[in-house]
Length: 151
Image (cartoon, rainbow, N blue to C red; front, top):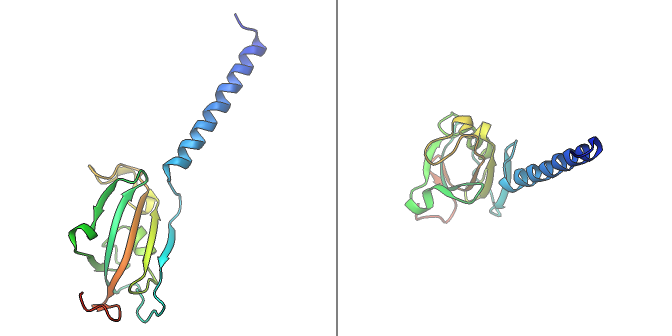
């Protein structure tokens, strides 16, 4: 039987190793606790911005933190249209698209609490999932960006 000191050292080693593994897996997973907004492209001129109550059109690609795409309007060629700030979409979108310029592109990292929560959206989005959206604001109140006649 090992001595009490040897047992204590072994226990400390196990706790230390476990904490390193847990820390590494949390960082690797890409989960976030608060909404993160990254501006990927902003037009030189911003004549039209999205405000609460505006009817907006957005192209998007939604992925999980492992990179798996769960939905994309780009593949369908059909942007989503909704009233911003009215609860028609997840809270992360209602918050993350405010002030966006027509033609602007943003990457949103949305924590579970501003997405689908602990219940998720089976079968594609597991409970507690952080969601990553690449978004592009196509139009606000029917007004596309200047020179965008294809919309």
